[in-house]
Image (cartoon, rainbow, N blue to C red):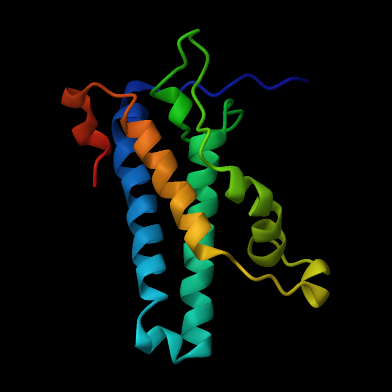
Length: 151
């Protein structure tokens, strides 16, 4: 059985920007916290903050790159589309696309891969990809409508 795309109702569409902005804020706060001495000096706290940053990056990746929403996932394509009317997806997440599987294996699932897998994360590239996708997304809105999506 083929699942059809989820079609959000008006209340869901209205609430989506706040949830998106929450994800973006939490990603940015976690990324900034990773550079503070109090976090860098505590391995456990550093791991907690790193995992939070990566999980929020993964959520934002899904928002920006999903063309279909078979579940009730909020995706950018619910709000902006390409010139041909198809749901929009970002072209700016090339690095994150290459490490999403690593994020899943290292953080989202308890796997045997983690026994031997010791990833190193290029946080500057991850942050740059997210920020570039966000700018790309905002630029699709008329200026009068951007405020709902701006931090």
